[in-house]
Image (cartoon, rainbow, N blue to C red; front, side, top):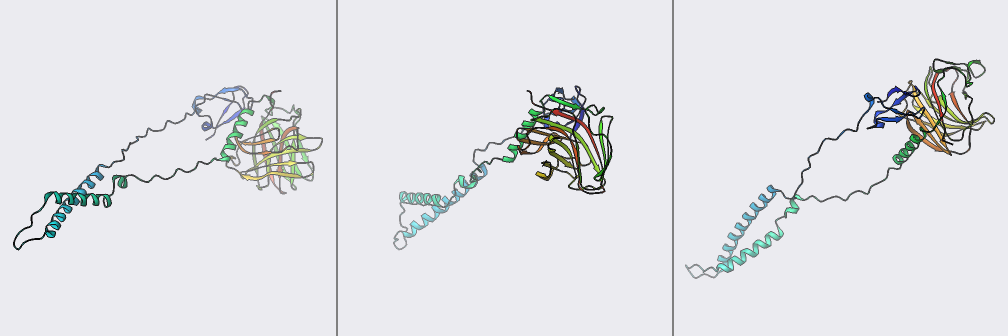
Length: 352
């Protein structure tokens, strides 16, 4: 279960997953990148497995040996009696006299008969107690898990990039869109106060709104923000989240958005049309109607989509080479009343 504590360096709220930081006393802050000490009450260690008693088998069963031995004795006795009787009956007899018996011949006959029966009728101990071992299956490689592990490793390296922009929404020094707008698309009110960037929107038709702060254009970057989205008439096509590599000259950008019903998407706007690179995908990483920590990175043509500090998906696209980062929301239907609250907007870039 995720825990939350404030970074002692920058004060940002950190959504902390104990199971992802087993046996760790420190971790990098996903906002400012500084190494911080994990509170003692949130640390978790790898559980020590219970010891297991392993019984070593010699491959022999005492009870099985007793049974085999007992059966062997019975067979030997029966064969001896049978052989003696047969030999006696086979010897020619004078009237009223017993034919003499040759002990050596009887012994050889008994021995041969017993050996023949033991060789053919009595199962060996291996037949009784040794199971036939099955062939070991050929190991397979889980390509999906390997890719997820690689993407998460890349993300862990990117959160240590230097912070280019840290927006706590205390004031509007960076020139975000604020105020009330009433046009053919929606009645909107954007405000900054108390560490929150709040959007109140009543849609009149399908609409998309977005804004970006004053910042230099970037090629490679990691953008993050906390978002809480609620709407009176949820639509599976509603999204809110982060835009990046945005060009105000060409009006082009990538958009990573999430929906309260538990879906996410990645789309690219070429100035006229949207191209859905990753259509709406269901995920268990989102917490419906709660605060979710979103992040997106783009390094070269590689895009990573991060939800609550876990990489949800990835994509490669090189059509947009650089630009700004910002926030956006899309409402698919008319008559929707939506409230969006953004906090802790950060932009990280690689070291020059």
